Amino acid sequence: AQRVTQPEKLLSVFKGAPVELKCNYSYSGSPELFWYVQYSRQRLQLLLRHISRESIKGFTADLNKGETSFHLKKPFAQEEDSAMYYCALSGGYNNNDMRFGAGTRLTVKP
Amino acid sequence: KAGVTQTPRYLIKTRGQQVTLSCSPISGHRSVSWYQQTPGQGLQFLFEYFSETQRNKGNFPGRFSGRQFSNSRSEMNVSTLELGDSALYLCASSLGLAADTQYFGPGTRLTVL
Image (tube, rainbow over all chains, first blue to last red; front, side):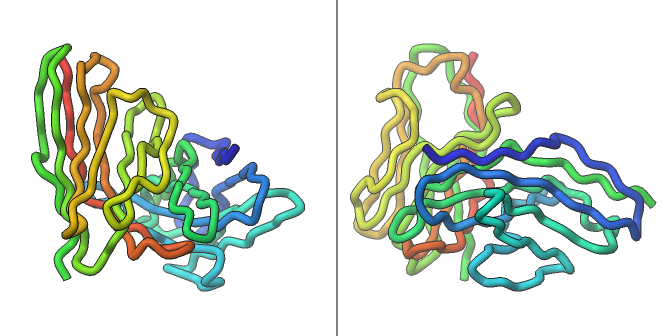
């Protein structure tokens, strides 16, 4: 069964500090992993996905298959990063059965 | 391109009634997925439609059903509403290919009294 775990419901850091949002998953095959973000009063939107291997708004995430993790990191948090972050897993080829974690609310304090 | 639209945005129903929610995907997108979002359970996958066929289904009772039309627009129906069905219902569209980005609508807020 697909499962995504985000152990922290709330995370608070100061501006300029590094931030790491944790995500662990369980899946028997080769999953596709994503991070979605929801800013205040905005729609849920894609932040990044592991197959792109890109950095968006300074965020990166590395898929660690050994630890079944896909943690989201940013070296210097900004106030505008305050949002709800969801880790998500899809079963891969032609499978859009997307499972989301419970989400982590990140607050970046000035 | 216009984004994903959902109608209505807000809905109030009473227990036992049924409700139909509508989702219009981004032009060219063939996949529509539905999610239920609640404070307690978070985002839960309901089902996905691709080319008018249900391709994936989450763990929801049969009271929750959906369909997709030839223009990719999708509807979701909930029959015999229960208080616990009160939630934000989100739909998302994508091209339907592997590891696709899903584009979310604003959601329909359903309140069951």
